[in-house]
Length: 151
Image (cartoon, rainbow, N blue to C red):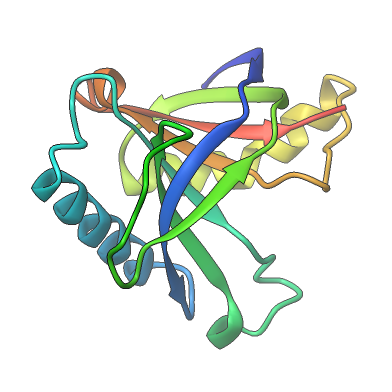
């Protein structure tokens, strides 16, 4: 698993939220967002999709866990559809882990990235969310990224 340090820009996003245990529901809400975005012609070659687990499943009941599937949009993009919300992610320094886009690789990464960060002396910035980033050009190569905010 390759790691780089990157300053992510402040992203303007639209998103759909899944509430419940992390797992298959996350994939289903991502497919729902992708289908909606495709119908609006928003999934071009430069599209960036994000997955954000808003809660720690070790401290939040599974039925209360929130997972947001997001699409990066321009600041002036307006929405009028039900089920779509608007938000913004802060710019910030992140440890970016590139990995295969498979359930096994993502699951393994989630188990290992925190140990790797601590081993290299980085401190997690808990004021910003950890982001799963899916850029079209990477997805075409069956790759994705986990971006952990650091100080």
